[in-house]
Length: 365
Ligand SMILES: [Fe+2]
Ligand SMILES: [Fe+2]
Image (cartoon, rainbow, N blue to C red; front, side):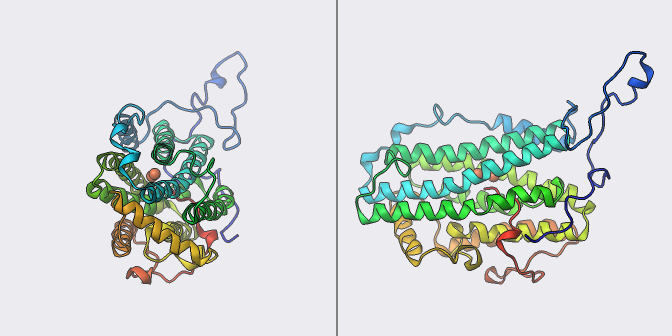
């Protein structure tokens, strides 16, 4: 593992938050005994009900307003399996499953972040806002499940492959899951290596590209159900990006140099992580272990999904979304006077820092 000091200074308060003990001092004025105050982070209570940062509280309220019910708000009848060829159904089931692998990972990553917010006795607004991100990422995975089970029941977890393409689709899903799973140990240990605030300052890239990717899928997909579902995801990711950008501005000025470097590396490493299906060329450091056939079948299956009315971006468009997304993030770190990571393959200038899988701290989609 790379990284800096072990989680260093819970006692010192370098980051702005109402880190406090409610009713501190009352026990001294009372003749009856009070318990000793519990010490964070090993004790997460007492928790305050103060809203906290008004901007975060407002984003939380927006998230509540933006909620949707995938069971009742979607005209599922309009997604007719009979309207597609067999290859198209397999291609769609495959694409939504691969997307869900990343959304599932995002759900657990943000669930861990939410626990971190409780452990650090963060303000009420931040804790609740993180709950809504967990909810959203879980919904995005549910979208994948509902589409896939409608079009190809059982795929991929209760499915017996028969054709060559079915074998390939399932093998590709298995490789993707195994690869994404490798990052979980890193996510967990990141909480021992870095302050919670550093981790919360490093997930903007995935949200930025998620906004652009799903937003364009919503705009360009011919099928109205796909357009509606992608619209939900784009709206959620856009809200997540607003949070991520705000947290960079809030926390980065209080970080040590090594913490800034870790956050910036993660902002760049996210590109390599999602490059598997969201860039023209998957990053070889992260994805070089996949068999060549993975990429050949992936392209074929994506093409089938595309022909079914899901407007999956071309290789050039994918890179363009990444470039735009990362430049949005870079503009925020630039404002902080922090040099962004150089990503030559996208034509983004910055600091040359080699990245490895260990640099992935927190990624969400
Ligand atoms: Fe997200
Ligand atoms: Fe998501």
